[in-house]
Image 1 (spheres, rainbow, N blue to C red):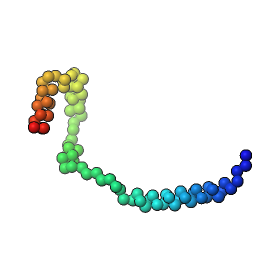
Image 2 (spheres, rainbow, N blue to C red):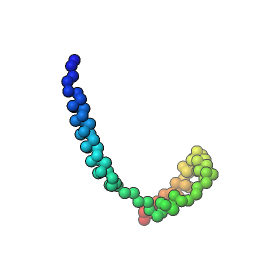
Image 3 (cartoon, one colour):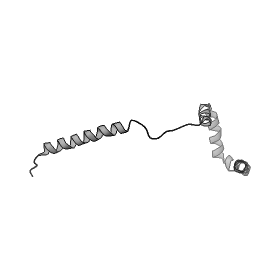
Image 4 (spheres, rainbow, N blue to C red):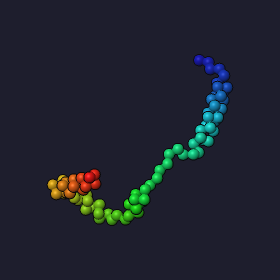
Length: 84
């Protein structure tokens, strides 16, 4: 099999890629999306949480504490209060 003029084609492809690449770099300088974190979220993020709290919560999950009628009723009441 004989391949002719491979060098010229590669140069054209490289030039096209470099030209396209330089345009896309200029276009991507300014971000289109913006993220804002609320005051409440920043306050929550700054709170210190003790690893003991996670241990207690994990133990309650494993024991089924959160599946009890008392806890379910309390959560349901809080949800209803929030949306009423």
